[in-house]
Image 1 (spheres, rainbow, N blue to C red):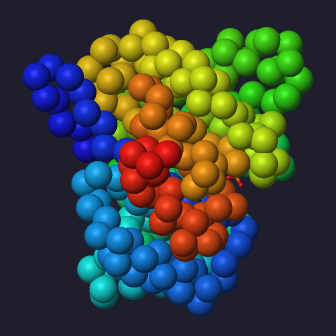
Image 2 (image 1 turned 60 degrees about the vertical axis):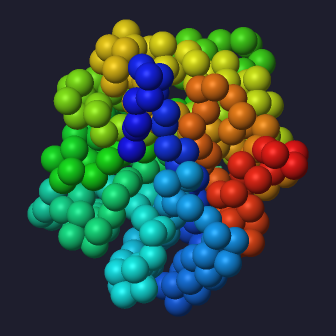
Length: 271
Ligand SMILES: O=C[C@H](O)COP(=O)(O)O
């Protein structure tokens, strides 16, 4: 949601938890329940920061039932989707099914999909098209590996990933887009990119979006940082001008830790 005040764009922060291949459907319901209770006890106002979780496919129905039944403000999404809508595609999950399960978002092009499933920018472009066909907001993941970073080619590499993945996405579709910058060398390593690194890349991504879709859409698009985000480092990263949220892996599996990341503003003050 973007509120334009006196011509300035105010982007609602998005704090997203990617559970990856963790939490069965019972554990998943428990985690969401504990997260919601922790945030309620802390008086969290969801318009200050949107909260999304990305459970494994097997958990989504349970999360839907819980969030609807208890009227929780936590939204959710899937970690991937098929390029196809239906048919003889064993093991694939259609965006149509995810929409029916109430998914607000879907991760597309996560580095672990790119690496372990050989997803090219072209495949990811097709997955973006599938997300838009089913009116699910894609969270497009981009980011460089360590060798590219060491060579100082991280900006050009990441922007190439972005532009090739966005091939075929219209300006109208891009009204519903989130981009997550996740340097591969910071994922799961405990080595978080510094706030300046996150800002450098998010500013470059925003400039590329201006070029592709125009100023208005680019300024409305939320840009996330992902890679070893913890409660201890989230506030400094969120303080950066072009960083509008975080995509959290390991730390999202602990309700207290993730709730502290959601409430980064309070650490901003005390940080
Ligand atoms: O999707 C989340 C990113 O891969 C970051 O994971 P991490 O927080 O465990 O480093």
